Image 1: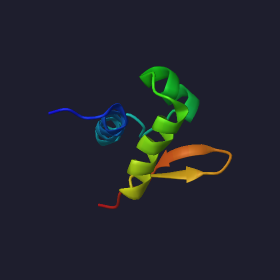
Image 2: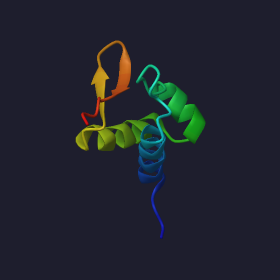
Image 3: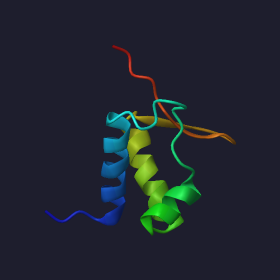
Image 4: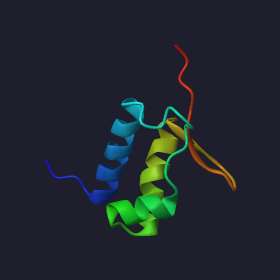
Length: 73
């Protein structure tokens, strides 16, 4: 099935979160790093992160970055 690249980036980040890739600091790469890694525009990267925020997986902290929300249980 075809997915647009923004949705694919959101899926990739979701899988990395589920795999525990960010368990150390809880911090995702910066938007610029995600842009460089994915080859997408900054707006597309922001939309992918917004998907994860809407799902409650991550939260942005102004001036610090994007962090995985703690999961209870």
